[in-house]
Image (cartoon, rainbow, N blue to C red):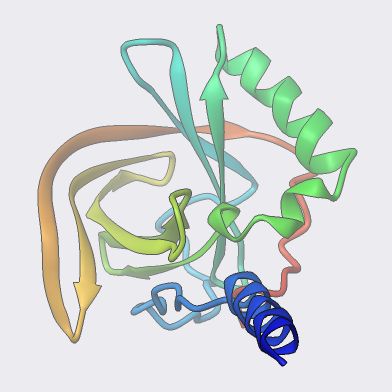
Length: 176
């Protein structure tokens, strides 16, 4: 009888550890279609950091944003990476941290996405000002929790446009 009880307990704990017991952040920005002219969306926006790490975002007319990036030696190498990993492969579609939404109102831009981390995934907003249709400046980042900004950080990140075609497919299972 004790052996049967132990086997049952082991099975129960095994199932519990495999089940998802956390909940990723919900996005606070609603996905809305973008048909404005404040920013071009026929390519990607990039930010080169000091250590040759590039942040990269593709914005779409359906309000979806895809995040890419990594260590690259140049914008040309970043373009090659996008073509190889995001155009010629669908593997990027399975990672929730590649996805998010954006909103543009006047000359303000906000985009929110999940960031890679231990579960649960946290969603952060980056917000700033559009300088022209090929450049924007992010001035703050924050996390929305219970309708309040938390983890607020000041930023000074200027993103530049690079025309790129075709862009990765924005169809995904994470942003509806």
